[in-house]
Image (cartoon, rainbow, N blue to C red; front, top):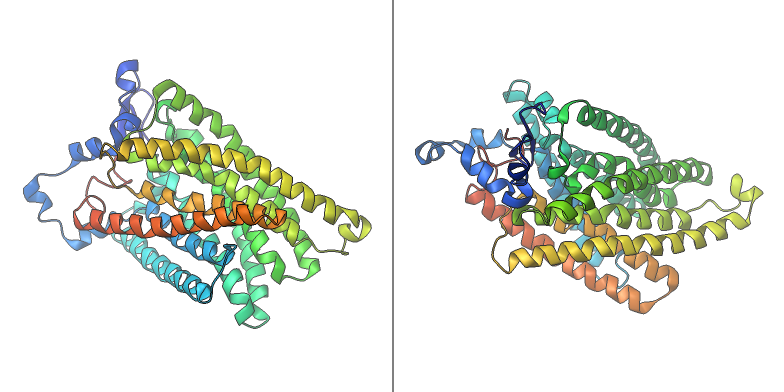
Length: 414
């Protein structure tokens, strides 16, 4: 870890902390591109980098591709207006998610096996470690898609398997949320001047426990739904509250130092995720309440009351997601009109946080039985579907042109 007396590093930019004017020249104004170029080898040396060397630069941020691809599958399953073949397309994206996950897992395993202490270094790195939760979020996405597409096509063994995986994921996400914040608090020394929405990511896996519960609960018996409901509400509350505590740091950073660098502005959409997925999860869990069982047998009105509360709390939270989405979109468009955007893995934030926002919009429309809101959600789904292809194309071009997966140009640089 870098000490406060020297430099701190977020998204790859070294920040002297002894001079206010220099401190403003962090990644939010300059982006990671200049810092990366300063660290590049000579052109002659770069031309000699072999495929093995490129594989050593797989980072946890690559799992944002998995989150986004799986998010598209969930979006196609939950979009209000459907047509024949939509489920088939969704299943294709689900299978693609699994294949890409296995490929990236193999690539990361290769890196850690071939590079001494690379795993520990990645988990302790103040930049790359922020994206470790994307690995756990990819698992949550695969489990949610399995529940959405697999339960109706398999036997009774799958709900049991999903239930076991749910509790294992809950335990793992708890350990991750506590341990990763401890590591960051204990030695990362991240200055507020370098604050990005990625600081929310360590609590995301725990927060997605609620979304996962909402997806898996309908396939479970009442005696299994109730514990999942309690766990889902608990962890969704944890995620939303921690995100709410981090939001003021983010807004303070924007007020003091302005918009982030053009290359980093797509990452601003990460702030949309907590509100969107919270709305999705509480509506989904309210729909799957085990009626006439346990607590809900003792208090039969609780089911109806909680479903009403879930809807109106979701509407209240939805507007927070919309506000973050709106000014993030304006920030990106302002950079795009000047052709200042340059690809980074943060571009996948165009997709995965906005999937939750779109699903929340559709769920609210369905609860209110509003065709207008549902059509808005369907239009948003089309936009995000198209954006997935745009970002994928940009990533492939960036790999081909050595903009990423290259020495000095990824989240693992120091």
